[in-house]
Structures are given as C-alpha cells and as structure tokens.
Image (tube, rainbow, N blue to C red):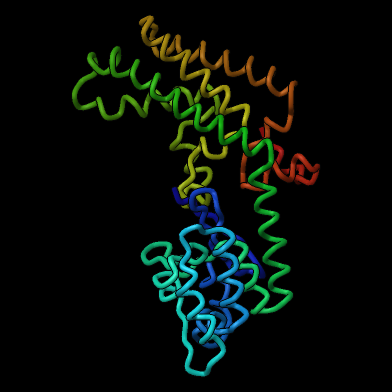
Length: 295
C-alpha cells in the first residue's frame, strides 16, 4: 500500500511516500530548485555514497546482492564511473532507493538515505529536512488525529448500514427518475441534522476547500464524526420503522444536539473542526488560533 504526503521546506514541496510502513522521500523534489543536472547520479558515483548505500542494504535487506555491491565499490570514485538509481537497484536488488514513473514519478529513497542525500546538498538542508519530517510524524501520531481517522473510517462503515436501509425500504417506492437522487438526499438529511446545511450549500460557502476535493465531512470534528456514525445507525432504523422524512429529521436533529453538548463537555478539543492536518496537533499544544476553534 502506498500513501502519499508532503514536506515543505522554504516553500519547496517534497513528496513522501509510505510503502509497507516505511517512509520514502523524493530525492527528485529535493533537488528540483538546485541549478544543474544529474545531481542524484553525481551523488551516487561518490565512493562514500556507494559504501553507505551498501551498508544500509546489508542492515535492512536480506536479498541484497553483496558481490555486485563490491563491484560498484571498487569502481566508485573513478572518473569513468557512473551509477544511476535504476542501475543500482537492478544490479543489487536494493530496496532503499526506488525509481517510479507516472503520477508520483521520480527517485525516492528511504528516509535514512534521503537524510544522507540532504547532507550532500548542504548541512542546513539536512537539518531543515529532518526537522520538517519530525514535525510530520508528530502531527500524524497525535492522538486526536489518530482518533479522527478511526472515526472517519467508522462513519464510512456505518454508511453501508444506512444505504442498505435506503435500498430495501426507500428505493422500491421511489420513481425511476428520482432513484439516483435518493441516496444523496438521505445523506443531506444527516448533513442538515448535524451541520445545519447540505453538501451543496457547504461547497458554495467553502470554495477553496471544495476545489481541493474536500467535502463537508472531511473537515468535521471528531465529535461530529462520532455523532454522524450514530445518526447513520438511527436513520437506518427509522427508515425501516417507516417514519416519514420530516419526523426522522426532527429526531435526528434532536439526537445530534444532545450528543454534541454531551461530547463537548468530555473533551472540547474534539469539538474543533479539522481544517488542516495540523489542527489537532496545535490544539493539543495550546497553539491553535482562537479563530479556528469553531464548532
């Protein structure tokens, strides 16, 4: 599984890919604002670089080919020696460096190797890179961010319970021309009960976030996601009980109000909307601007 994130150093965006639990940083992005060509190849032809790459592989890769590595090490430093990421990987079965094409194309290296490459660029760049990477890890490991992710997954899981009830009880009595709008209408019933607006109304009021592909539930607070999961379950049962849409809305809005007040008393931070990935990281440290602490 590949997850993509990014680091920002001096207004320069550097991609980070998580592959099977390990972070790989884009070497291509690290040098894209530096004049000249072949920076990665120039770094790899150094004897110290080859020795470092080989040692890293020996520590972390049981399938590394030491004989081929010894051949490169003997040639490293010679004027005629050239080593590309592809050549290194193909010859030694290395896993510390990855070359990708397509949407996330470029040369990526395990964070240990990327930090070493940062040293070659400059000591200052390496320090900035390490500091920014540590900040990213702190944000992602923040307990509130972890809980938000869990609740977002749970609300998507409960969505199946919700849609099954709609499919079984609402769709059969809905005119053919309106069937495609029924699911969206029921989702907006929950949005109105919880957020006080439909998905379309949110998009009109939040054009920047909408253009970035975010929706009303992507910026919900932890407590709102908890309530949303509960509302999906309640509405599914109300539908199966044959209650009208008007009655269901009144009951759902009342449930949302009561649960919102109760959950906020337990932990106010969980009532803060997740406007950015840093929101809960800053809030838990008492560094979040008051203007962002909106319900």
